[in-house]
Length: 268
Image 1 (cartoon, rainbow, N blue to C red):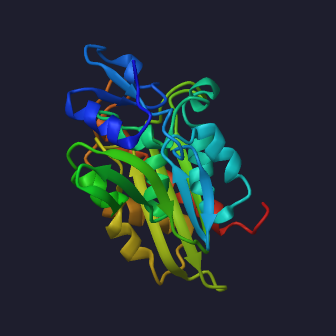
Image 2: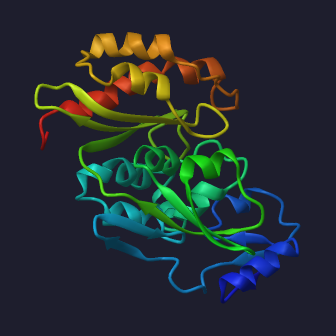
Image 3: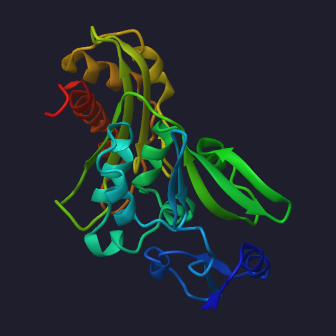
């Protein structure tokens, strides 16, 4: 294990073929045939800081710390729930925000759907300098050698939530996960809506067709399931825990669950 003390040092080792190492909860599952570079000695990567409504999160913030920090923030409840329910307590104490975003060949990162609906941007450092990218762009076209250092969340209004379908009650990754952020008028009309789905396909992504169909509406739960079923364009992935067809079939129910949570009276 190589201990990097600066971002430049981490980049240099990465350029030589080393693998960046954060919490290590997923890396332990794969081959250990290359050197690993731990980022834990680089200052500032574990901060949680508010700046004028914006929230800045270091890449080494653990799931446990994230859930605790956001436990009283209804606008960012999706991220608090995703972090607080991911994997197991032992994993949550080690797994990091940056690792959840960057880990290759990991189809069920709970935090990513929540980050997508909250409008997250990521800060990366490359040999050319520092760059901020919308998370959706980063996921669609991963850059070359880089270190993801921070995640930035804009100021939020409205409410958000995160729901999951599990094979068992604990100790595993979800068969399907869905995050939703909602702003509604007093009469219940949807003014703004963001929905993102994880674990169903190889990477989480937004559901723009359903978002567009529901803005300006006041759907009831029964109609919502039907609309979600008709507008689903997801192609489920087959894996040992569930077939692809099942992952897509459960999505309308997750949509209804999330919507019911966000339209319930505050405090319920």
